[in-house]
Every structure is written in structure tokens, then in C-alpha cells.
Length: 272
Image (cartoon, rainbow, N blue to C red; front, side, top):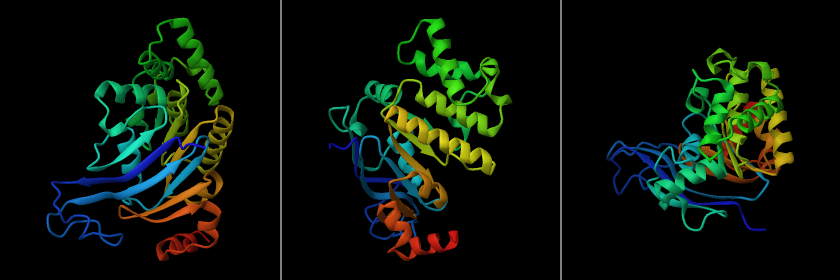
């Protein structure tokens, strides 16, 4: 089976950078001692298969969100390449029009901070409509029908469709983000710390919804989290990140039951 997404040597350096940034940093220290630049992620390579959930786990600052934002074109990579099977060519080299097409038609993004993914003073339905309008939907009735269906699927009362998103709880805002991300049936969903700051009961329900939707729509998911419990529940394979480096990569069960890297061992032991 051909992979859906292939990432090759993805590197993002924050700062001016120098020829020695990668050589003089590692998973212990990601600040270049020569130029002071921060290595957000370094030489990251992985593949995602269709319908797979791949997890990326690590502490804050490990580089996992940088990977997501680079793939969604929020950040420009310093080096590396990425390929989607629906697009001919390397996506980082795509022109601005093609990048908009990939974001609007082929990808969905749910940010840790809902204010990055939603227009907070626009209604829940209006946020979904924004995504639909970007891909050519023009019939107001069909747009409202699609928005109400998605919100209902996310367990948000349809009577609140015309209420501004700022009035919603954190859990509801995340569900509006998911509905917006799913509006055009993307092939891959990018989830950045989806459950951070939410009550445990809300976390569990959102994760259940994600798994249900993933099975129903047969979409691939790249899931970023610091929570091994989320990884254990959701991901088939997992990347462990530390200070911008991949320190372990493999089947989730194998990594959690028999971690090889000392950092992964520390993460697993701290969960017990």
C-alpha cells in the first residue's frame, strides 16, 4: 500500500542559523552555541499510511507542534521535503495557490489554542462556512445544512449554530474546530494537543469522537500530544521527540512496553 504522506529530513531552525546548528545540537540541547538559533526539529523522517493514526509524543518544546505547523504551511521549513499522494511533486515547493488547495481540500488542522483555528467573534456555523466558501461552496442552504450536520455530529446543539464561538466552552470550541477541519472531507487530519486544558470527561468524549470519525471517514491522522495515555488509546505507531530530535519511532505497543531510549523509558515510567 502506498503511503499517504511521506516526510523526509524535515528541519526547522528558528533564528538566523549557521552551518553548525545541527552538528552542535542534539536531543539534550537544541540551542546552537555558535549562533544562538533554536533547532525546532531536525532531520525528521516518517510515513503515514492511509487510514492510520500516527502519534508524536514529547514534552513542551520537543518540536512536535513545529512539525504539524510546517506541514500545514504555517511555518516554512529550513530544509527537508514532504509528499502527499494526492499531489504531484514536493508540497513545500508548491506555489501559494497549490498550498491553499492542499490546505482547503486535502488537510484539516485542529490547533491546541482554538483562537488559532477559529474566528472567535464569528458564529460556529460561520466558521464552518468559511472553510466551505474557500472551496467553492456558494449555496447558502447547502452550507447551513452541512454546518448543522457537522455540529450535530460533534454533539453541539444545532440551536447554537448561530452563536459566536467565543461564548462556547473550551471543549465545545475544540469540537467546532474539528467540525471545521472535517468540512471538506480531508484525507489527513492534523491534531495539535487536542485535549490540553480540558476536563478528563471532556477529553475522553473528544477522543472517542475522533476515533469514530476516523473509522467512518477512513482518514489518516497525525496526532501530537504530551500525554502517553492519549497515545496509548489512539495511535498505531508513535514517534518520540525530545529537543527537536526523534529519539524513538515504531509500533506504539512496542514502544510503551519495551522502550529503548532512556528518555522514552523516563516518559513511560513517569506515567505509571
